[in-house]
Amino acid sequence: MTIKLGFVVAEFNRDITYMMEIEAREHAGFLDAEVADTIYVPGAYDMPLAIKKLLEQSEIDAVVTIGCVIEGATQHDEIVVQHAARKIIDLSLEFGKPVALGISGPGMTRMEATERIDYAKRAVESAVKMVQRLG
Image (cartoon, rainbow, N blue to C red; front, side):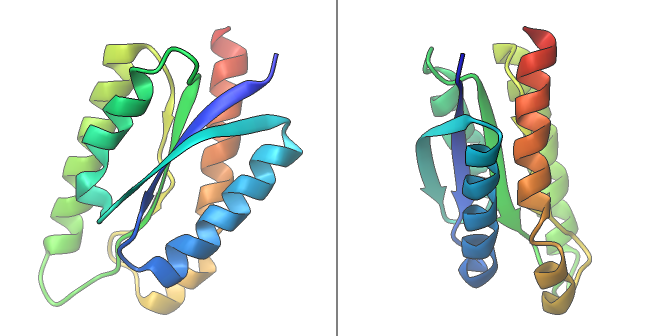
């Protein structure tokens, strides 16, 4: 059985999320998983509705989020990630399907974000393992 993944990719900091998405797609192929659908959203805060749309599709086994939240002058980055992560957990529990957190940040510089591009790869691995283990 091929595991079918949905991707939700943030366009904010697209130079970084683009590289994250490429790595995630390559790793999905390596793990014999298929990226069946992708929804692009403006930023990490906008992910929950797109995640819900993917989880509603019976053929989607798990969702992988891909985003990058870089530290700014205020605590906005912390608020964005905290609320997005909380809702992502809620959706996973509501639909009984894994939703992997591939959002790097908060509290990181652009350089640190570049060094954490592999977070997307880890999220794909997490989603695939959860589908396999939960059966």
